[in-house]
Image 1 (tube, rainbow, N blue to C red):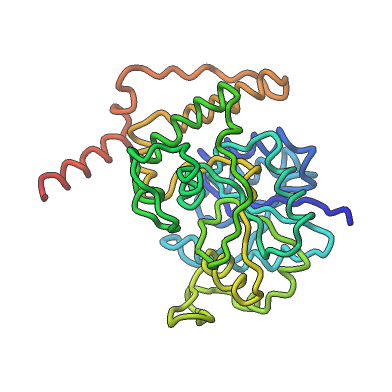
Image 2 (cartoon, helix red, strand yellow):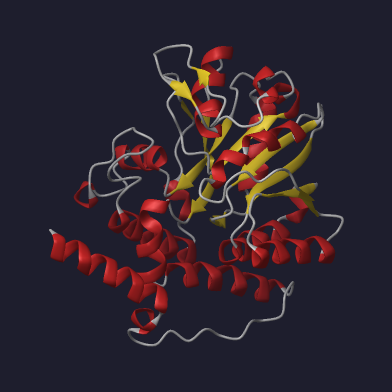
Length: 330
């Protein structure tokens, strides 16, 4: 059976979406449509999404649903899966801060999904995802001197450490520029213990999602589901998709190690990576220059990064003040 491929993104944050949208347009031949789930009340971000939809109306679509609470934006996301249940469609969900998409990643993920119906989800191989970092380190690729990554979704190194994330991105960017990204790949990994997995990139059949009775629950945060094993409650989409539903259906999720993506930051890493490094600008420049070479976009004005420029930014000063306060109070 030939499947449509529809990509979706809970959105959004414009500084990240500018990078992701460029990759989606670059690989548009591999995607039938991209749907932005408008999961924000930020006027500037919404205006940016609306502008994309106006400019590319046959590709970018906006899905608007109730936005519950700006202090807990993830609580509103589960309801959007109700719109991703077409029998003839493979859906790929990408976080809005996916900062790199390998040329064959979308195609590879969709093909692996079509060829392997057994898992409930197919997961991407995501740089800066704790469990993917665990497998990369187990291959001897990531130095243990950076910190030992455990096979845990919210690992203290792979999820929490900003310095680990900085080193990871710096090496990844170097390998992207030198054409050496293949060494980040690994063989497929089945998560047969129904581990929680950060859902930066996930893929499912619409026909499978249509059978999920829990889609009737609009707000998982307020209407939790008791896990089948253990005494804890499932209260968000990530737990539902990576722990509960695979256990319920006895269909463990699988990481497609050949489908390579980059994820910028968890909230534990974000302030440092944005305020104290130029990594986000480097990812911007990387995709901008690729588009310029391909003739798909006008070459942007070159960004100039001056010595200590990041320390002059208001975001950097805010971060530094917070760190100083923590030191003084220690």
